[in-house]
Amino acid sequence: MGRLRSLLIPGVDKQLLVRDATKLMPDLARRRFIAGGASFGALTLLTGCDVSDSFSADRMLAKISKFNDAVQAAIFNPYALAPTFPESAITKPFPFNAYYEVDDAPEIDGKTWKFEVRGLVDNKKSWTLDELYKLPQVKQVTRHICVEGWSAIGSWTGTPLRDFLKIVGADTRAKYCWFQCADKDGYNSPLDMETALHPQTQMSFKFADEILPRAYGFPMKIRVPTKLGFKNPKYVISMEVTNDYKGGYWEDQGYNSFSGN
Amino acid sequence: MSSLVASDEHTVPATAKVIQPAWVRIVHWINAVAMILMIMSGWQIYNASPLFGFSFSHSITLGGWLGGALLWHFAAMWLLMVNGLVYLALGIATGRFRKKLLPITPDGVISDVKAALTFKLAHDDLSRYNYVQKLLYAGIIVVGVVIVLSGLSIWKPVQLQYLTALFGGYDIARYVHFICMSAIVAFLIVHVALAVLVPKSLRAMIIGR
Image (cartoon, rainbow over all chains, first blue to last red):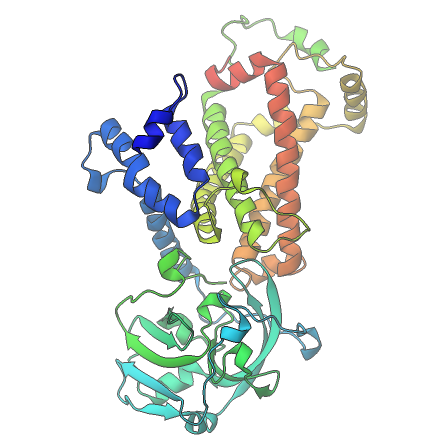
């Protein structure tokens, strides 16, 4: 800052200059810079408020996003089914998508993998893949919509999550099913109970009639056609039924938590 | 054309004549803010998965990254929609749309377009729109409705699936949304250029007369 101040040109609006300078910074540095310095002093001087409750665009946007969660939950129709498509409509090749390259996707041994069930359930046992494969399965061809805007139609086969929740004696009055995954950096995502109980929400074991390949989340993906793609966790290793909002990998970075379609 | 009709209205003194009533000015400027927020954040969202072979420069987008842009977009949408509904309701209830924008006749449009292209289109009476203005202002209201509906069908392709189907499906709705944005930006360029060329029109939108 000291160096910056000595460079200031007379007659140039300092705030505009700082704003231009922050635009040149990488995102993370910019956020920290704006939060920590640029807006701090200026805003407290202007408003005379205590710094902790001074206006912040980030905080306002986070509040509106929470409001949007509530609006989406209110308009969510548990009986409205996502449109289904004929097999001929399936997108080929179906895109791999993650925050890492496909080579960094988890390599899971199906023989040792176990699906841990925790929280507000009667039966907290862990499930092997063979046990899960014995549950009744259904197939559905639906559109996967990414938060980035692109979409692709795929075919997923597996057990409706609501059937599994019944089997494990989950308290379906709880607010969330919180999933943890084997992705590097530990992916996780909360799913609201109403969506978890939606008839098309599925524990998927197959893509296009084949055992789920590594790229698409072997051994298990939670397919939620009423949510954006990032709310469809892959490489799932555990589920906790809980009343607490425990956040998620992308949700914590600012993606809207409900993100319903 | 419109300048001829203007001579009928000398009963009200020119200085007292309110060209833009307060409600129009208020919704206009709220809409201006909402539109700019929606367009700039929309460009950042577009960049996450471009429909065409180009991206928008980071210097003209809002939000910094996809997540930030979505927060802006889904916040400003409330401002845009609520303000837009107030505008449509008052525009219909006060008869403003009927008085200002109708009728739009093909003959009137053709002769006013000719006049505009030969720089003969008068702007003497700001309270009356010529046929080019009528067409553009009525058209941009329609585009505004379509961009909101296509946006809703992209946002909620399951809950509002019939709306999405009306646009020909999710993927086509994205293109419709983009084309409407392009139309609004094109309108905005002409609109701002003319406001600068005819400063009293800008003054009327600020102080009313």
